[in-house]
Amino acid sequence: MNKSNFFTIEIKNILSRLQRENEDKLKSSTVVSEVSGFIKKIQKIEPDKEFTDNAWTFWIKSLRGNISIFGNFEELKEDGEVDNYEDFVSLWKMEFPYKTEWHKFDVVEYNHTFYFYLDSEMLLRYCTDNRTITGINSKDHKLKQFVLQVVNFVNTEVGKFLKNPDNYNKYIAKKLPLRKRYGKIQRKVIWENLTESIRFDQQLGNKKIKKLEYLVNNINEKKVFEKITANEFLRCCEICYVANNYF
Image (tube, rainbow, N blue to C red; front, side, top):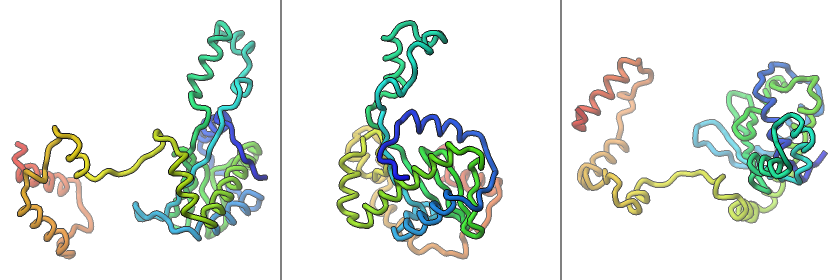
């Protein structure tokens, strides 16, 4: 069931079908078995806990392929979508500008359920309590086949990572295009490189910054809101605005 290559249009077509919500539950199938095994394998990797939930991120590479995969020129011309072959090629390259595309594959664990996302679209969710998959129509054999191919592909990637994490991370760092790179930049770095930016550090001064650091590090937990109403939130905002002379 391994698949070394995906075509970008194939993934695009699958994602367009995921927009239709489906609450069918798969309880006994090859998909459930493969997903269950995959989850056990990724749990060997330290998860990202940036948002408190356990999360893992992987990348799937797809190919644009040749133009015949995109569509049939004669059919598109007959439908009035293109006037000539040059239009056909232009349309193809406009919709799929990159020969190689990268797709983000996320797995998030929350409350005994694993959520699978492909390019931010939820592919399925798997409940460990009853070993049930939700989100896949039991009669949609093409979607089930695609999920199996994705899980097996990423499973292979996980194996590569576990075998040599440093080499795998270097490979991703080298190959992943800049348009797919997201991250955090320290505000200090922005201030140092954008001369016209507002320098809050300079406006506050070292004395106030040190006081702020002390207050944050020695916060009284008993005075932290466990719950807050909309009115209380707006009151806190008002206090901050007044303190900073926003009015």
